[in-house]
Image (cartoon, rainbow, N blue to C red):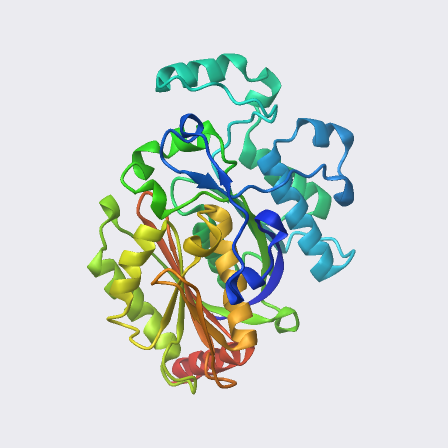
Length: 387
C-alpha cells in the first residue's frame, strides 16, 4: 500500500537549508575538546536553543523542558501548523517520534571528565537537578506535542540505540496501512552533543576513526497520510532488518531488495537512480558497496558525511530529502568525499530508497516515490487482487 508524504520543517546547524545537499556549502563545525568527546570525535555541528515562545507553550514547560525536547516540540508543532493551518488533530492522527540519548543538563557547564567513566556517571547523577534528572525525554516531548495539537490517536516513541528515526517512519507507515490512523506526524531529534552522548555510545563509536565522522545536532519532521490531497510524494514500502557487529548482513539485504524490487516492477520509471544512506559514514559506505549488486545504476549519498551524524533526525531529513531529489530531478553522490550532483531528464528519477542504519545494527529501508507512483502501485495492487 502507498502512503502519502509531505515535507515538514527541519533545522540544521548554522541555519543550513537544502543548499547543503545541492551545492558545496559546508556546515559550520566547532572543535571538540578531547575530554568532552572522550577522544571519539574532533569536531561537532551544533544547533541553537529555542525558548518555545512562538508555539505558545506555557512558561512552566519552557522552564522545565530539556533542550532536545524543545527542538522537537517546536519543529513538530510549527510543521503541523504550516501544513494544516490552525486545524487541530484528533483521534485519527498518530504521533511517531525518534529521540536521542539525553543528559537532562542545560546549565551549559559540563561536568569535567577525568578519564573515569564511573566518576562521570556518579557526579552526573549527584549534580544534575532532581527535577530535570527525573524528566523522561520521550514521554514529556510526546505529551507536550500531543497537547498542543490535540493528537489523541496512536503514538510511539523509539529508542536511540536502534535506528529510532527509521523505526518512527516504519511504524507510522504500518499504522497507516493497517488503518490505525489517517494522519501521522513523524519527527526525529538528534542527541545533544555532550559527554553523556559520547559515554552512551562509547562502545559503538570506539570502533571508528574520529576523523571519519562528526556528530551533529538537528531536528526534522514529515507528515504521512492516506489523503492524496496532502501528497508531495509517497512511501511505497518499508522493510526492516538487523546486522550484528557492524557487518553487512547479506541475507537481510537480499530480503530487503527482494521486498523492494516488486514495488518497481511494471512501472514506467526505469531503474532505481538514487539511494540515500543514513548512518555512520563507515557503516553507510560498506552498505553502499553491497547495494550496487542490486541497483547498479543508483547514485549513493552518504547523508552523515554531508551533514554529520544526527541520529534519529537524520532518517527524517533523508525522507524529506528524497522528496526534494524527486522534485528537482537532481541526483547526488559523495562516496569519494566531495559532493557531486547530476541533473537528469524530467521523470527519470521517480523513486529514491532511504536506507537507515542504527549504531547497534538495526536497518530500515524505505522506498519513496512521486505522487504518480502511488496511483500505479494502487492500480497494480487492485489488479493482483482481482486476479
